[in-house]
Amino acid sequence: MTRVWTWLAILVATLGLLEAGTFLLVSVGLLGSAPPRYGGTGFWQGHHPDFGVWHEPNAQLQHATKCFTAHYTTNSVGARDIEREPSSAEPRVVVLGDSFLEGWGVVASQRFSNVLERDTGLAHLNFAMAHFSPYQQLVVYERLASRFDHDAVITSLAPINDFRDLDLDSASTMARYEYKYRPYLIGEPPAFEHLDYREPPVRRELRRTSYLFNALLQVVRDRRTEPLTDPDASGYYDFSERDLSLFEAVLTRLATAAQGKRIALVLIPTLKDFERRSTSGPAPLSIRLTTVTDRLGIELVDLLPAMIDFRFNPSLDPTGYFFPCDYHWSPAGNRAAARIVRQSLGAGFFGAESGDRE
Image (cartoon, rainbow, N blue to C red):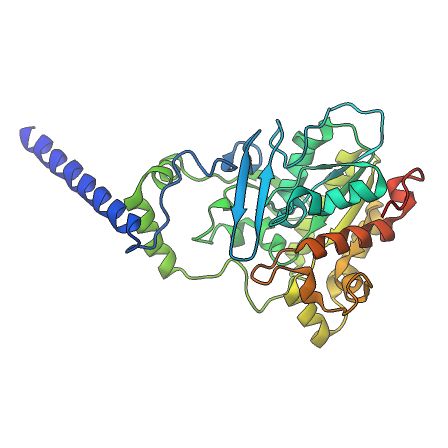
């Protein structure tokens, strides 16, 4: 028994020395692994019990990269929005989406939903979240956003990664992406079922507290170097029948949950999609989705052809819609998307009382 305790003490001491040594190497920049996050980022929480990832309530973040700096704040329910009352006698719009509609890299006043709110005079309640899949958008609507009085819903699909994020088989193999732990639809159409795919508790705690564990994770990630997104793929063209089946299931449930409210689906392109359109012609995705949206009474706005033709950018150069070192919308991209959506949907969606307030 004494020998067991001796070996246990040696093991603990060895791990302690390795942890301390890894800490020093990371601190002085000699080791490139990520430091542990302890309590998380203080803004994004990657282990929400319902949504997988969500914002911390009443939080703020100064998000700085080499091509933008933006300050974010959240309200009491963790939405990146001002405080909203659940009840309202005025017409309102719920906005669902991922990082594009959350407003990645831009301050709130420059964001898609805020531009729409200003130009239509209708409150746009933003429940979008970076790293969300379309199914997470649905779950946040069913369990949170639907509690707030509203008359219409804007949801979105960013084909660059949303099809991957919908499919558990695809997402679960990504070694470098902690936000893969979230709800999924599994099974075969039409009998999809809900699954909460979660990071094992011991692994999560080690990732959040140990320099040594994160260094070992880095070794694994370096051996599995698959990118989060195929740099040569365009989701507008390179999608599968299963991708469409999963997304159709999400839209069908959203239409049911909305209980007759107006719904608009916005398709969000990136520069890769513009490049593919120039060589391959009109994208098949919106054609295929039109059959689904027509059946469900959802209005479809495809920003890919609209942004090419939109006169807000006199040069018609799509690069102006995006940050130079990031695939998300610049402030100009947010403004253009909001104006295209407003013009495409018109008063029939936003209500006759809303006017052009530019």
